[in-house]
Picture 1: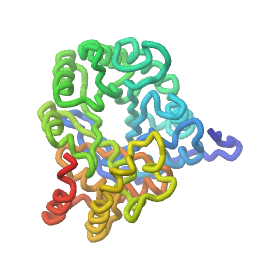
Picture 2: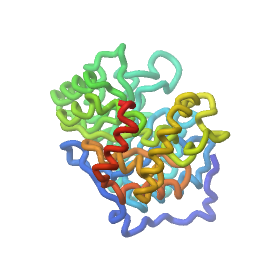
Picture 3: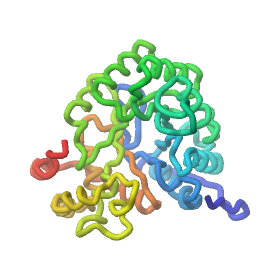
Picture 4: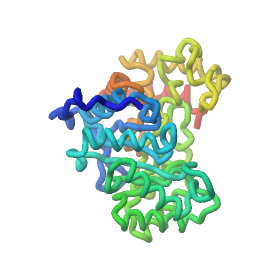
Length: 340
């Protein structure tokens, strides 16, 4: 990663009007308000990315009132490097504003070799939060997620580990990601008994993945939990990039991608029709996709990953137009309801 030349380094002073630029939503019935758009550091913050660009993205986010930065122990590549990059940039830019930030990290996927570097055991989770705090130069995170359910570890063990992480002051709140309805219900029950502030579920949700509408959103509401949507643009499918064709060097043509060429080609006619609706609304397709999510009941925030400050600003514009006419809702539903 390219390190800033400290001789040319300028002290960061955030915009004074930053809290007038975005709306905030309560996460379930908790005391926490999250910005409508949150910044994910899954991509573009690893060891081989440009530090100056990563810094500009973080500064742009905070200047627009985005207080929530979302990480995980294995974001990179390599594993841990996104947290290390954030830790350096935090120390240089945001340490004076720690009380204004809501920083999250996660553990649950592969992190280090051997039998203790994955899934949901007490040993893994507690070791992981200790390493994450060290990498990020933090005394605590605001939110710590179990990144995915572990079929081989009792939920009670995972819940008690989360309890201890909060009790030890290493996290203020906890959340889960990728848990199904039954797993979410059970974890909510366990954490309620332990009096752990469980406030949010991070779910894949987009116009092309509406599966959480079947049961999970209802379950979250019943348990008074918020929901933050990740992959809101379906790995870039809901952007201008795929309106006409699959471009060269796109994710759909690369290995190790969540996009399948055949699935993309199948969806292209729908993408074009959705784009026409967006244009009639005075929006770009990606903006409408985000606006639509923010219009859904129970959605606290939409988590975006960006490659530049300009891309982030374009996403933020989606928060300025989240109202849909009945006809628009009907048209969008007809085009996308099969993805539930």
